[in-house]
Length: 363
Image (cartoon, rainbow, N blue to C red; front, top):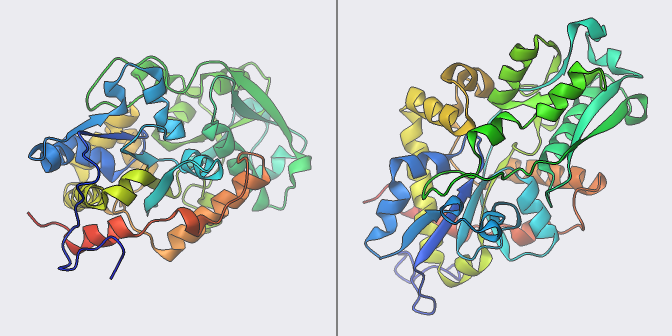
């Protein structure tokens, strides 16, 4: 019997810790958490218990909102890019990983037509832009760009020292100053629109010869610039080439919550699974929801995440996903994005998912 499982196989409960609020946050990428929020599944699951379910954006306090990155808010869940949770695990923060998903997304290297860069081989001796956030403790997009360049270059045998990596300072914080919202995400429309403003300006001004981009916003940026697509690798057959900060996406939780109230963690995860099931039979609604989350149109979201995105949202801890996360951890460690190494198995907690699956989709 699992240490968290009741003798009758039901979800366990505990009188040791009374909880009045569960917090959540999600990245503007395709996740079942976003679907669950918009369907109201999480609110309905816990309202009879008198437990409020609130977005980090419901708080105006910067420290609470920063939990999206440092996972410092007690009794919280996060689904999104893997760099922040891996960074926190390396810092020995009290968090656990309770689920993983993999949604392929558009990833590309772009150059202006007049650059003469047509293929990845043409990057030899040229300058590629690496945005560096100077106001954030975890610079996930910098890691995405570096891994993206290196993955593309590896496919043609280009070494890192054959291409010049040019840092582009970005002073605006990832979080920005979004207004308070009980179910909103942390990024305002303007903040999302400016994600690659500095990269684009550097490319236009000739300070760099190529930039990395990703997702629906990346497709839209390329169209806006009239850029040449040097290589698209988000749907490459090799998962190590297309892997990165968002492949796989991590669903993490406060470790204390999972230890002390595994019943709540399992119920939360069960509703995320319910949302993933709903998405499987509601493709257009799901893609439109993601377009709204990302701040783009249905057209770009549909093109950026592939025809089966609505079928790929169910969290699991399958071995291939855990292995892919270990590859990402090794990359981040090798290139200085993590402060220390740690065994990945030590931060994966399977109990909430096992319990959620045992009672999944029941009333």
